[in-house]
Image: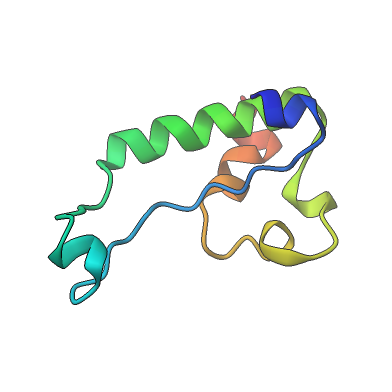
Length: 81
C-alpha cells in the first residue's frame, strides 16, 4: 500500500502462465489460487478507495481500460457496501 500512498495506481492483473513458455516448462509456474487473487484485488481496491483513487479517474493505459482486471468491479461504490 506504500505505492498508493505515493500516488501510484497499482493495477492488479492475475498471472496466467502459458503452456510452452519458460515459466511453465522450466520453472513449473502455475496460476495463483482464486482466493489469493480475490484477497489481493479486494485489499488493493479498498486502499485505492481510501485514498480517493479510482480507475475511472485514470486517463490512459491499463488502469483506464480496466479490461484485464477485476479491480474496477472491486473499486466501485457498490463493492464498498
